[in-house]
Image (cartoon, rainbow over all chains, first blue to last red; front, side, top):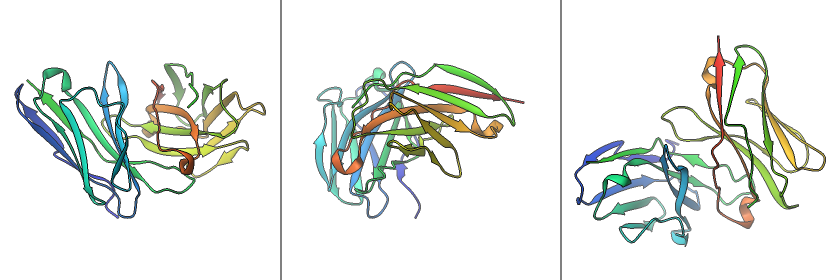
Length: 114
Length: 112
């Protein structure tokens, strides 16, 4: 398996623009997570899905952020409008429903909002 | 999920054992101890996890105290490639809940 695949790897945009980050989880995994990492706040859980259904979005910072999972092999995280403080590395991760709980992370999408 | 406490940074000489401590004094009976690490610019990587007994795999060993209030991750022969941030996390079994919450971790520097 190719692992969790994220795109784009890097994005630079201007304040006010819409940003869409994409994630393809590992085939067969039931859970998908979106994390954000900054120097100041570390690694924060934004939202997670189970069987394509959002379970907990309490980490989503505000209404400018939205996430969807239309099917088992694809998820998006959208920021509209983007702001400079959204600059961070966004990680997607997935895992199966087994007892191990091992989370597999993608390589991240580095977002810079000017 | 229970909170964990880790030293912010540690140094280790290459080839020596790296012992990374973690306190989780409020851990519940059904919570596991997980360790992940994050090498610079990469996504976190799973290392090992355990409930009560000590565990060992090809990457590391996990020693959990009898009262389960603390644990130690051991990298038996640290290499320069082990330089990373190591996260200790406690949580219920994955089939009882979904979240994995990361703290600040320990930044391990392995020096030649």
